[in-house]
Image (cartoon, rainbow over all chains, first blue to last red; front, side, top):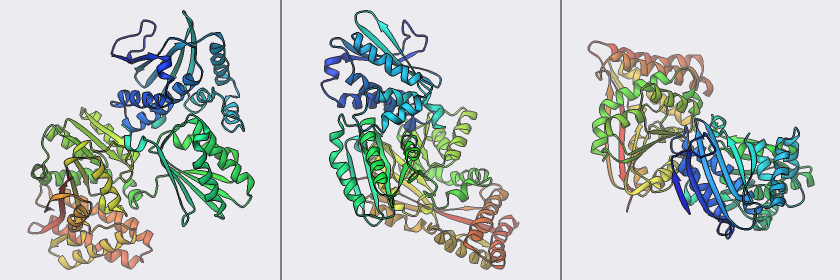
Length: 173
Length: 392
């Protein structure tokens, strides 16, 4: 696992706070990695917020849902990279991971639901379905409940980037 | 900064007397089957109750959608299967995601309600938050700081420590701590959003940096264990109906070898000359009035017992008297006037006192002010300080 601090991304004007990466197979070797990574990163980025405890708790919840989604839906080989950025009250989480075309398509459909006009109804439907919850439920929750702006990018070498932009601190006030 | 001991694993329990099913800890399972034993316990608990069933998730720090889907889905099944059953879910505003996540249950059934546990935390909090009490709190701190500045050093506070000020109120004491003792880290926690808003504004206005003001419940803090060298909790055990719960938490967040510092009052020992009898009568009544609202404004001298019972060692205790001679007597008079406004003007009214009783009650405060401003008078407000060391 590698961590860097400070600096700007080559493709983002939002300052980067932390970057972590690990092999997707290592990440997916244990479900607890989602909880550990989200908890660790939430701690690291919450110290100078308006309310560090509230922020850390919310940030961890949001990031955990993203990581759990990637845990369930991802491609075969390569690294999972997690970059977290911040500008003012605006937080940006970027997860880059291996994704074949069907994987990317799954995310595309999930994002479509988040952006749909009846996203809230879709969220409730997914939340209370009799079946196992859909892998995209976490993304729907982020869009509907956290007001997150979610986007995906197709990258070279069979990879994709899932981006969540959040304004959590406004919600705590 | 969520406490690891809280976030590791989860537990549940059912209190039959209260018909309350509580979930604690962190719930982020991979598969819904991991929730089976919890769901069975929930079903068993509900089967034995009638009327309203309470679900308490105040101490549920984390919950993913797998867990929510299983747990909330079961609650919904249960109310749909039994027309006599109503469910109330109690969340905590300290856990940011909880209320809005569980609130969706209300949209799914009219027999489910969701509410935050907040308002009844401090019995007297609403009295103190209403009606311009903030300037008086600042004056109180100004007068007590004249004494505590030196007392704090005797109780072990020195620069460079990790310090927590629990129940920080409007945060002015934390600002003074920051200026005088330059702690390495200073966390100031309170359960009043309006007080914290004020505290942050003051810190910003005064250019004070480095104080981490956080919203939290002092009896169930989300701060990690064993991390502070010096934990202060001033004038707060006396306004809480279960002070031992707060002390347990102060002990938990304090490092082994660190110290817990508390201050409390014994209002019936407020004094003044002239007109001492009237003053004494009113402050005896203050003690009864607070007791009516499950608060103990007489707690000060009991501090030693509380600290010993909490398991602390090397207890140090002393008292000091804020008086009309501490600077401008008008400051002292302003404090007493604010007490009259809150105690006689609000609390006694809410208790149902008659006009005559309230008139007599008010008189003692006015006589205390008279003594404070009298050129040859003396008026005092005693405060007890106690600290103890957490065993290593």
